[in-house]
Length: 362
Image 1: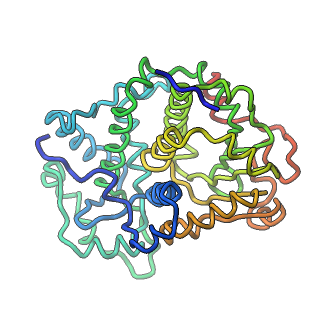
Image 2 (image 1 turned 180 degrees about the vertical axis):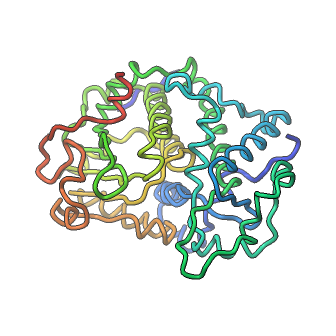
Image 3 (image 1 turned 30 degrees about the vertical axis):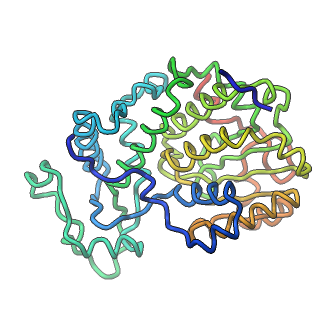
């Protein structure tokens, strides 16, 4: 379907360290490619690792991450570009600090999360700037009333690990990403994939991101090569990272297979080598929090593959994925008014337009 064309101290380990270790038995039961896809999905949240630094404000997080990035760039860590020259920042009228802010927001976690509670028992580490400012306290030293709601904390090291994966991905695909991507070159392909993102926060809270197989432009997808596809997804993860509603509320992902056959669905998938890169970028390197995943009207074989993949997913990710034989069961969870256009329960358009395409066209 797709044509092929020719700081002296790293703050934390790469994003690979975030992936949960799976047992040998599970990996033997699940085909290699499906297992790899499942592990990528499980890494979409990252983890709170022992010794991770937690702060209570986005501003503190941005300052600390910028210091780490500066140190890594000075040390030429892994020969990566820690200034993100290939990221289309100017396209969205953003700078490096804005990119860092998106990843700090992505790293948020609640104080009562089990992994956070286990971590705050350990001795906290600080950046030199935090040591000079006595108002920036160790999270574990800050006491609150028992009945007070849990605070939102920001994991500096998790944000840096994620940005390391972004820099690594850009380095590995540098040839495809040069020169910097432009909105007008990817708009048609973005729409051809059946992407649609609600232009406003839904009554459900998070923004809805859907892929509707009924609207897939098969002719254009067949013409697209690997480079065009990678550039489109590179543009998309930045567009979503700089969207305030998506950053603040997260995303509910819905894919409607529209009763398409398994053979049709498989033909629409890019080669595994390309799909692997796309999944790594969108699940392991992006600054988008996916709250739920809903798969509707699944072909039988795709449903079976999904069930296999669940075996290697983290428990948290397993709880987020739901399969539906129709939209009625989904609208019992979220009302029809929550769906973006072309992805409501009747499958007919409403007056909304895609927020990402709207931004790109302005």
